[in-house]
Length: 561
Ligand code: ATP
Image 1: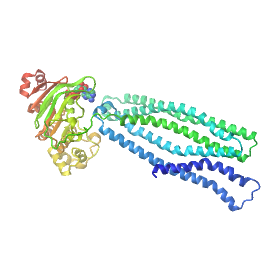
Image 2: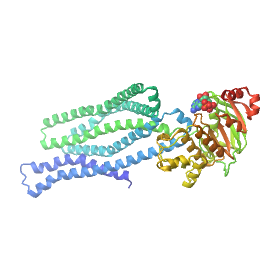
Image 3: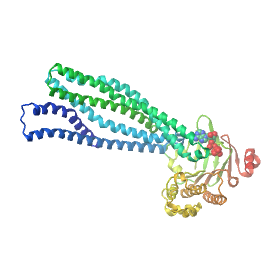
Image 4: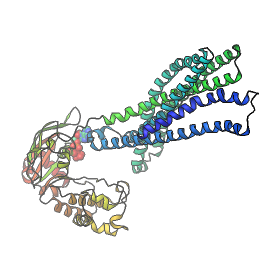
């Protein structure tokens, strides 16, 4: 029997002890003690009296283990959902992250999953205990009705149930709507906080503190309002059910007087009715909880069901080694409706350097992003060594490409671990060698803990030039045949600049290199220069040919010089 089975068994025992135990004791044991004729020995009296704590012991122990095990299952489910959610985030395409906000995703991963877990444990806690308590108490009322030749008691128990269904359904429906709104608003609130923290520097620089606080107050006020609606609907149910059930108790009170019922009988009926009504109230609460859980699970499901547009092919082509011939044939691409790149036709031979130039927004980064399949071409074919990139396993393709971006991302861990991300199997020796090639070893050694120095979130504890050198060291470690380089535009001090340029020249040797070039020193050395304008390649050639033939190239070049 699994953990859940055991939990349910314990819940059932709890339910029986709860629903039948006390009314039965009042009905069977109390008359023996309080009949007036009884002459109980001390031992019997202690025996009868001990039945009460014994009953609560059974109830308490089985109730505890039921709750404990149910929580164990609930936490396990929460863990599984969070892992699935996180795994899904790893395979979703970049286009998905362009459309989503980090705060919303964070809220789905943390608060929605927590809500699902709370629903699951809350519901499972009561799902067995309460119906069995109800059934036990109804059974007891049925037995009493049979003994007294009257169906009144059973009717009192049963008649209340349909009356309670109405408010349960109505309130549940409203609650679902508000629960979804609350979860959404929680996402908006997380987004505001995360954006504010990430923009700490801009906020100081532009004096946006007051504006940010005002916006945040607005956001949390909205959250407060929807949360209070959830509170309203959650707690409105109990008084409704209590009033309806109180009418049931009043009826039994009236009926007991009219039929001259013995007070012991009346007490046991009251206990049984209470054992009937309490589960109805709790089952109503369970319904509410389910509505809140549905709201949260829908939001998680949105992500889990999100199509993975960029995935491995069913029958991937094998590639043992890649030389690095890259070919764009009639390639077009659009992020949305309007094309960003159209009819791109270029062939870049392995081991050559290709510089991408053009005005801002012309499509250079988009072109480079197609090679590692950060996005898939909308039309045409993009091949590496004559294999369509869509026919390669993503891992096979991306492990053959190193990307060095303008503003490299560093994780909040040690320099060593950050460098190792270039090649997870690399040894410390290899990492140190790559750092030497990237002119990073010297500054790393001067840090208080050397390679074990923590770099802070996004590498805040390092300078721009240091971060770039670490990114270059990562690329050395990766040693991939294709290199995509987004040249940094920010000016560094001349020593740093010189080191970076020397490191890059070494890194580029014997590789197919695509440089989004901002410096004309790099452009002049390139084997091929692609001039981009409004999503098209308007000219291809080397520096001297383009300078004479392409007006846009000439003007870009002259402007920088
Ligand atoms: P820059 O030199 O300024 O970096 P670029 O030549 O690299 O510019 P791209 O970044 O490729 O230009 O952008 C080309 C066009 O695509 C621009 O109009 C840009 O607004 C748009 N674009 C870029 N990224 C996205 C995206 N993720 N979603 C929608 N549109 C985008």
